[in-house]
Image 1 (tube, rainbow, N blue to C red):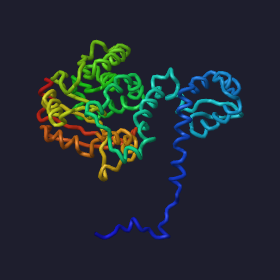
Image 2: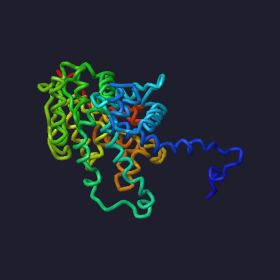
Image 3: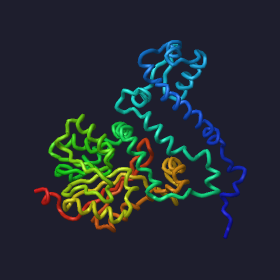
Image 4: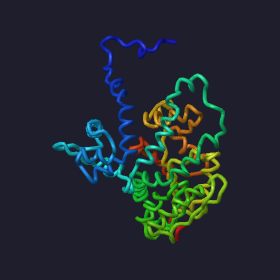
Length: 352
């Protein structure tokens, strides 16, 4: 086999080592973000812009506090003018604890998942993943504990995007029943329902998560419009007679993907629509970089559950869906594939 020329670049092909220098800043950025979240700096900057007062509130050394605040400015989490500090819009929306889009909790949860094994990367390369069952590796308990943090993420990013996707469907005016499948706190389903006053909704997820969803539903004034189906969706009932089923970032828990997608098909009216919102790895599972790198830590311990590009669509078609329409959306958490799958038949006739 011929040796790849990529392994023998010429002097003229020598790249800049700028990426290496940039990567060195990663730990510093994460440490600053951690400290800003744990100290509640964004909340303090709402009340005072004076560095001496900020140090007093934090109980920290005044000189080092200024250096810390200057670094937050460099990071983009604070602004500085005439020696005074204020939040940037990024910190205002996502790091104030009283914001409904506060992401501090989510950052902490994802840090534990995404960084947990990095310190022993070499060890895991040598030993391989530890012995564990698939159910244990998926760690559903994590998502139960973090349902409220997930609600903030859905409000910050996913909910409006999902509602936009649904609004763009040609079937949108005919939609009357929605299932938010594995929808966590249910904020996505609520956003869709808010734009479709004639629509009724349902949410299926694990019982502790459903409790958080009930709070969100009541706060939105939609208690009479959303049916709740607590339980493991692999075995529990999640209803039927839907025009639309939405599933985002949760099909990893399906133990038999084709069989599960077949259940979704059966739950839809003829002409009904199933929307899958998941990553799709490309280039021999090496891209998109965000998906590969953010899940490396879990993958090293045996949780390499990411879908390849087209995997969900192919499996859904094999399960009996009639057509698929796919697009790629760029969101803050990386590129995502939106698969819009349709059941054969006419939704208009079914709805009538």
